[in-house]
Length: 433
Image (tube, rainbow, N blue to C red; front, side):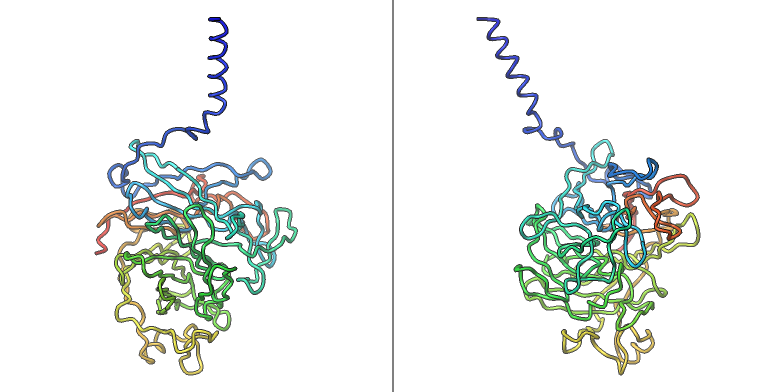
């Protein structure tokens, strides 16, 4: 009888071990701590990653990519969120090559542990209203198409995705949901805490039974791969604030220093638009985060590496108060407000001033290259950690690139080193109030 009992207990223990993960997942959640209490400023802390696949057994495609946008956790200063973009891709022919074509854009939920380590708590994969996983493949005509043709790793054309997203900006709400902006439509999409689409707002009105609200028609003139790169929400959670990465092609291919900010009242759907003037033509406004309901921090950068040549990675403080609303009287007008016979984008800063259009006022908060030699090309995520500390993350492009444009995917290496570019957290002390 005793032997039978021991055998029974042993079988129970064995069965319990086989299903242990059903109860504790990957183990207990590490003890977290505010990054400002344990991490050093002006110092690189690489985010964790896994390897999606390898090419020719040499080039790693990393399941990192977190850094296209970042945002504070709305209630816990120990945690933050970062989002990927559409997935690994390189330029190819008249479009993009997607070596992992079924990749789903995702939100990473991170903490900093009491050991000073960054831990990924969960990945929230983005989904359609019915709960099906989306991809980062471009949208078809009429639903946000940019003109980019998608190809697989072998260079074969692949189908478009109605719900495809090139996610770039992110905000997290206290109810657990997220708003995400992208570079296709551009779309601003509301996702549940589990990543299911609740509403999709764009100039096209492709909400798929999740509402009929739209962005002004002029935003359909966004430049491919330079769409709504940054997204913020006011502290009262009433208004979304999006910023376009670069000058829109309105109505032609223009590369000037004029770009736009749009605000969207979440209760009424009312929008306002403002002019932002970059320091020189063809720079990128790659993130925006709120200080107050009218003041924001904005990233203005080039696409250069500091280890290779002179690079600009600036963070500015802007104020919408006093800036001119350039919405015009007809939000369905594809060209938007006109200055004589010119669009806003066709006009110079001087011509806008002559027309009494006041851009948002801005002042430099920090030059990250001058501060500590910031080495990455794509500074794209920023959030406020406390009253004088900013956190920011770069987009590492999943550690791949195509430097010479021949369609061959290569490892993304930081110039002047042998280091593979990695999405990394940095902190800097600044006075932005």
